[in-house]
Image (cartoon, rainbow, N blue to C red; front, side, top):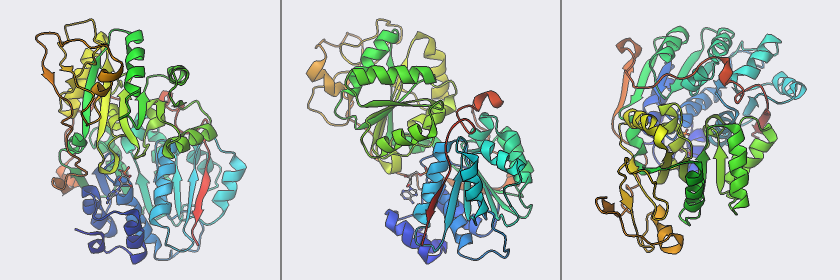
Amino acid sequence: MSFENLNLHPLIVKAIADSGYTEPTPIQAAAIPELLAGSDVMASAQTGSGKTAAFILPALQRLTEPSALKTRGPRILVLTPTRELALQVTAAADKYGKHMQRLRTVSILGGMPYPLQNKLLSQPIDILVATPGRLIDHIDRGRIDFSRLEMLVLDEADRMLDMGFIEDVEKIAAATPASRQTLLFSATLEGSIAKLAKRLLKTPKLIQIAEPRARQEHIEQRVHHVDDLAHKKRLLNHLLRDTEVNQAIVFIATKRDADSLADELHAQGHSASALHGDMGQRDRIRTLTRLRTGQLRVLVATDVAARGIDVLGITHVINYDLPKIAEDYVHRIGRTGRAGATGIAISFAGGKDTVQLRKIERFTGKSITAHVVAGFEPSRTRHAPKITYKSGSGSGGSVGNNYANDAPRRSAPSGNRVFKDDARPASRPYARDGVKTRSWSDGPERSTRSAAPSGRSGRPQAGRSTGSGRPSRFTS
Ligand code: AMP
């Protein structure tokens, strides 16, 4: 299958070719024809699958035809859980729509002054990308005209639900025409997502990529057992000194810890900054820009803040704290190995983390290999970790590369398996097989997703506190 076969407008196909894509990813190949045919679609697609283009390309296709109505409101509305994801969707719309005349994409995010957003909303809009909280404020003030809305996209719908946005999402959907086409993208399609879909989508086509987690085979997963905080810190400092680490995201549980760890790493000589929801939008964008442009090597981030980050240079994800929800592990490690590259995901696990580690392994269906760096062995032996020892000459991004340089040489404790860890899995951009399309009447697939917190308590990082909206680009 090629993009030419998808019957997309030549200006869109040209932009795809400019992006260097040669063939659609499985989610694109499955979803685009259904969406072009006008069906509602609910798709289980995670970041890294090419899901953004899967909905933006059909959205742009609609925009190649003029609206039947003369009103000025958005024709496409994309709701995302976070500002970062909203900005990425906006950037994708710009990228794939760059050859289209007068395309106007606007993002409306929390934290930006209302007068500016009011001005943006008063002009004609093709694509509106928004986080739910701020959009609701504008709807309540009667500032948005949805009369010509043709398509509503709920991106990372599961996350929006987790963050307590369900009422807002439903209220926004209710403010749009019933004739709209509705798309729902989510890592999982069961439980409350299925219920939401039943309420908002009309006999949707269900698209699932079989073995979704197999797509993370190009990410090597490791666990390092640690004794305590001091051990974690020493190990992190050591691992980040590996020259194989091009850029890394270090995931941490709290915003305050993100700041202090970034400060400590900075003091140790690392190029490191924090990213979390208490930062103002300008600071967040500045930090993300430094990451994207390679000026920043280590990002210390909380889950929500780092969601959707798509930076090719990220070779390593380090779970300094394990995620509370197993599914977040999948999202986290998906920040590396982007666009078919290989990546390494390292998790630190203390004694108390054993249960959570098992949950993650059950969720991903993959056991995570224990690694030990010489000189940084955990004192606990009950984990019976496998040992990675390696001479400094090998390739493959091993943490063991440092062993030859700055870790004291010790012999492997007897009884532990010694193996070389330069056998990184081959790059496997996208599974070509296993795309399943079926009608909603078949019912959603069962999944092992663990319960996630809900309610408005999860909101502070998302929409209302800080952030900015802006017109993305006025294509001439
Ligand atoms: P997403 O899942 O939307 O976050 O996309 C993941 C990455 O895949 C992004 O860097 C996209 O630019 C890239 N991508 C999207 N579609 C394709 C494609 N057909 N071929 C290669 N890369 C793609």
